[in-house]
Image (cartoon, rainbow, N blue to C red):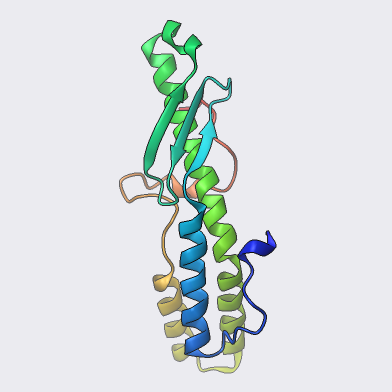
Length: 154
């Protein structure tokens, strides 16, 4: 992870104020990422997405005008998915310190009674944002961080 996204070591993440500041800084870091690109395997299609995965631009090389529609559409989808993958990685990099802190806090619950610990685990799990996909595509998030997309895959 780059030092750009690390939080100030003086930030007290055990206090509510420190946590609020960490989330504010994380949101600023995510917003500063801006547009993220992805390229098809053959380099003929480039797509740009926002950190939320919204497609904002596509660039087609001159050679694409000779392609059949099916092949071109697969390349566009592959480039857009690669861009979304790249954006998700950048967001995950920003959120990594917060997730590490959350895991440390959950480990501190080891001495807590089972009901309280389970409740706190559920609350923190429900509070995490879902940057990996939509409910319309339930399989999308399962392989998100495993590999880049390829145009010839279905």
